[in-house]
Length: 279
Image: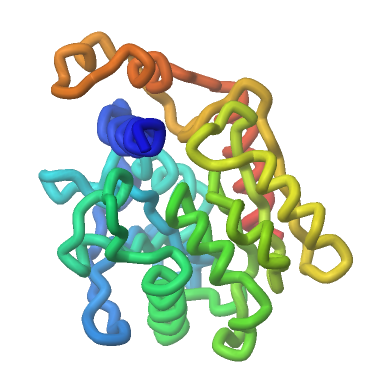
């Protein structure tokens, strides 16, 4: 239990203390998307012009999409900038804020489930995009981090194929929790790339490898890249955490974990994502 609480705190804190990346190339538009039993709020970033644009649905992790100031968390700003720079529109649905739920990293009882509510959010977001004239309908990808990546694994399973036409072009999952999927005979109906660090103790690189290997022969293209030495959240640059020691509840192990940095893995992941999304 202590380890689980510590891991959740590490994830949430890591996302909140990231240095602010360069400002995205466009200001976000707030959009409302109809979902079962409510409205799904989302942030939309679009390149200049009328389109049609290749579009990426981006699924936030367990800490949520925005901070107390309602601004997009720094963990995702860099990716928005990069995706915009390669000509993609980016739509980030807020699964937690739309339900008045805060961070789920340390929640003893989850109120929003990756395999249920968040998959519904993916489907609702997809349907909304298909009605937009600026979207290249055949080029909608999905990318997720942490809990959002776990939702992605459920959303690309063959069981949902009848509800998505045209389907996603491709999918990228950063450090999902593969343990349940690996036990349930996971497979994907669209090309799916899993990226995770070998030292990730929050998720399980071994389970992700097992999941991908087990899917061979009955799945669309699925690959896993396990980065030696990389930890959870390796894709986001971090600055020294000299101020963290003063934070309530800070611990030495947590501080060490938060300082983990792997610029090489991050750069490789950026290259792989760009290539995968253009498949």
